[in-house]
Amino acid sequence: MSVATKTISAAPPSPSRLGILWGSAIGKKFLMALTGILLSLFVLGHLLGNLQLYFGKDSTGAWLINNYAKFLHNNVPLLWGTRLVMGVSVLVHAIAGIQLYLAKQSARPIPYHEKQSVNSTLPSRTMIWSGVLIGGFVVYHLLHLTVGSAHPDFVPLDVMHNVSTGLRGIAAVVYLISMVALGFHLRHGLYSLFSSLGAGNPAISKNVFNYAAVVATLIALANISFPLAVLAGLVRG
Amino acid sequence: MRLTLDIWRQKNGADAGRFETYSVEANEHQSFLEMLDVLNQDLIGQGKEPVAFDSDCREGICGMCGFLVNGVPHGPENNTTICQTHMRHFHDGQRLRLEPWRAAAFPVLRDLVVDRTAFDRIIQAGGYVSVRTGSAVDSNAMLVQKNAADRAMTAAACIGCGACVAACPNAAAALFTGAKITQLGLLPQGQPERIDRALNMVAQYGKEGFGHCTLIGECEAVCPAKIKLEVIARMNGDFVKAVFSKRAEESAGGAG
Ligand code: HEM
Ligand code: FES
Image 1 (spheres, each protein chain N blue to C red):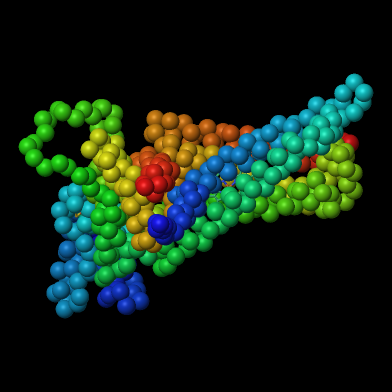
Image 2: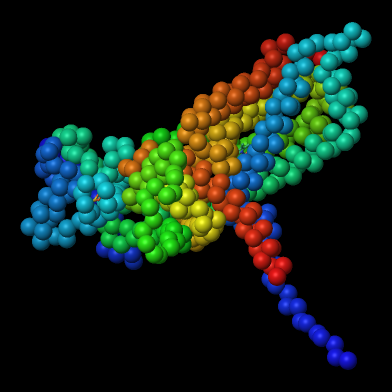
């Protein structure tokens, strides 16, 4: 009795979809847009939560913002789920952005002697720098108000105290500059992500362009209000 | 009017190149290229090498001409080729700097002339449709929506001059490639190859060494054919869809 044998030659593993996306500039921008949306949603949620700084105390005399912090810290799946998603998103987003920036350096080896910008916004031309600034700020911000090691007088879970004592002097300047950078980044990012995802109908993209400016300005101003309120003595722990 | 021109002079790809300054007497009825023709006549008369620049139709339809005037591709008139730009837009005593397109994918051949065959290779990679031979199809057998036809024809206006690449801080060819992908992908005739077109043209785009698109919009402002940024979103969408459906296709085929 003969045994039929069959040699199965291993086909070269075709790269995964994610691999193909990561290997192309358009795919990288697609992933940057997806992670950019997640990061932007977080920025919005983070801002709305922080607005409770302005809402004062509850009936027991506890600061609402501190209650909110306790609520988040007691909700371990929510807290760590968000931290995980944000950590992965910011890594994917930043690595892709830096790689694309480095790759394009060779696309014009001999620079122009004279080149005018006819149509583009300043934020659109400085995405890498606003991005790097935000990245640096995120690290500082975590050490300052989450870990506390960059804070002069950190009290765990007493957000009101940490903010009102922390957002002063040089720290306030860092926050101000970083939030302007965030505004710049969102001004272009909230518009360009639509194109990266394949949505570019001219009927809507003019509106998207304008709304992105409005939303980015509002988010930046609301965030800037926190250090300003502390400096003006409006927020006291 | 008398103009002072700082023109990029470069003998060939190996030459480092430099700006040289010329003075020329122009009149407002000339086109920009006619003004350069006059300059070149002067230079030939003086026994000097004329300035090399590309042109063919001089009607704004062939896409051969193009260089930067004072830092703007095709000069100060937005959405107009340099061959269709007239000297009435300049004034006596003005100083103009003429510089070639600069991109790794567009090496300078001589003076203001660059090699744009990278565009041809992108077209070869997917800028075609397959048509069954045989008797001619009835003219209205294939219906095309008005909206799709309009957008396809708008994209088809691209003359491939390369101003989009020249204007882009990243030297991206996204407006060009997007226009070619959009023009065919919006029509029923373009559907059979739509996936391969997106994959192959984008792959060739990458191989040619163009940068990536950051949707800054400089290209749209200078494009003489008024191609819209919309085409870049179409290219992105088609490419991402292609990546996903190509995998599905491959794994279906691979099972056999
Ligand atoms: C709060 C954090 C951040 C948010 C909300 C955010 C949001 C966005 C969005 C929505 C886009 C548009 C994506 C697209 O056009 O498809 C974008 C683009 C970009 N981001 Fe961020 N981003 C953040 C942090 C960063 C960081 C840390 C970097 C680090 C370098 C960075 C670098 C970039 C770059 C370079 C681009 C332009 C990509 C390109 O067109 O090449 N971003 N960002
Ligand atoms: S020479 Fe044909 S478009 Fe200018």
